[in-house]
Image (cartoon, rainbow, N blue to C red):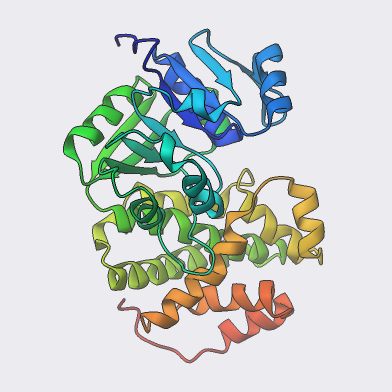
Length: 338
């Protein structure tokens, strides 16, 4: 691939594990990349060590990856922007820095979550705060940051209403071990990436209680049904939820302990409090906040989400996990038709 002009690097906003992994991947694919982090001391450490010891200690930064803690420098003249900041911070970040986003600059995001309080998808938040930016895209799918950073085979979905922008992202991301599939279903891809975190908490809790493989498979399957019901009610496409951003990501986060949300369920099953869980995991756990928003959206759209409801009761109503499980098991039989 040809190098991006150094005056117009691909800018990655967010120097956590996922932002760093994507920046490393893009630089490894021979693109000039500028990674921004909001903590100057942390960014200086990344510059000195040429790796992210906190999140990806064994991954050395390629030469084409540069770093900054100056948001004005980061947004001065990017080729396009890839956002990987926590989903709950989008509105405040965009509102504070909207004057720095150039007219109709391409903005993609790899964050997964819903806005707290409103349940809005990230593309809705960006559209409200940056109405002059029309080229928007979301990337999602079964992706652990560490595996992307180590260049293990990965596939994702990129959804955008701009064919030219999605093609540009695909060209820049696509490499021998990183495959990109294109979609136009922003709603489905975003909701799938958010909802799966709720279900991963449930799967982790079930495994932590020793319920076995049968239960895990049933939770994944019926969880996918909940995701599809709500997604279609919100305007998403059924086929999206059967793809990488739906079923693929759901299987990943429900079955592998690299998932922070699955770890949350495992720890809750051990009797840990949410405060203890946050301290032990040490990173953002998007599924906790997302659970509340998913349940509120389900009520708004009159959609049944029984698994998510019980996760909500455990997280927000101090319901014992065994009581939540018993509530699910005692539900009357019904048709499997979604």
